[in-house]
Image (cartoon, rainbow, N blue to C red; front, side, top):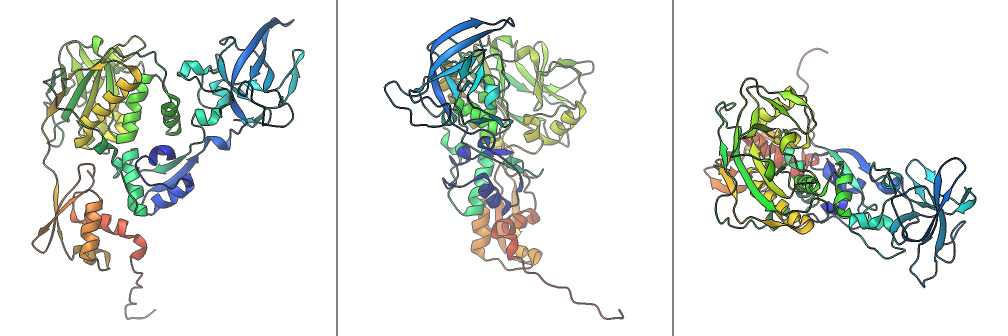
Length: 513
């Protein structure tokens, strides 16, 4: 899991000068493993600024190519150039040769000035080419290392931006941020989210934690929304495959709107490619709250949604454009036409959102872990959703995640939300574990005070009540891994500190040798 620090700081008190290495050093204290650091500035350094194309002259060449000889203003009009160095024009207007065809005079673009270094150790300096001295480069997203598109240069208006000329383009595009990458063990699926890692950082440092789920207000629905039925005829291990299915409807979205740079920058640092605004919002909420979502094109749905097991002979073309033969154990999302998704793994191509989508149905569901893991392995279909579902997702956050997605869609893609909502399923009984007061000391080999036991479990989010000779602990909904008194004891010593466990040499047994 990659954790962009700017995102983490929204929910945990991370010092402004803390680096990704500093954050990982704290997270190691609570049992999370260091993996890597992702820092765009390791490969990309300035000066990289916003420029405006003043003139563009097309010049045909003898080799059949046509180049653009451009003059580009890189400081505000009337201001003096403060940068110095070989190739930096004191007037603030650079002459640049560019071969792209997707921009015109007046466009604002990203200009890498002499002295800049791009990924791959590509150093920008004045060079004579096509009869001109080109002092800089107008950059594409690929050249900046922030995308794969190389059909043309990055025109900032396509991102909905109109910054002042001379603005630091790296700051504008979120390239000063950095991410700490941690390894999440299978029993701690809640850490596949900014919400979970922020909570762990607060545990490690004793600082404040702000739960992003608590900031979302879910309105009372005016009535039932899109019809959904849960019909699992073959539950695994006595558990229904889907025990909660929240559905919300947003109409009139504009899928052509660009993804804001702050959102795409965070997704990119988190290791997820920006695809389109609607899809990016789905991924953003998943990373923030740990709840995978699926967005359907509402106009492509037919009849009620039914969650059921597959029947013999059924097939589904998934979003990766592969036709898959389904197994009777697969849990499916279906409508009147048949399967439209493998639950918790991947959606179907027939109902995916596209550039023509105007009305969106949001799915935010809770699935049983074992069945999701089996379907993922059976179809060899790993996904960010299945990675989370098979490790356990917070049952109580489904409606919150759906509302968060609604808010982002309305803010960034426009449209209106239906005042109805679907929330099918029945809440599970919270898990309660009895913990004798002396059990942690007997198991770990060191004493614990009542304050340490009660305070640590409360910090985890558990409700702790007195019981005969100990505690009755109601486990928080996001900790599906806490099932026994041993699990609770491990959490106590993890947060109190493994370094507080005394080292004791065993007594040598009597005898020869």
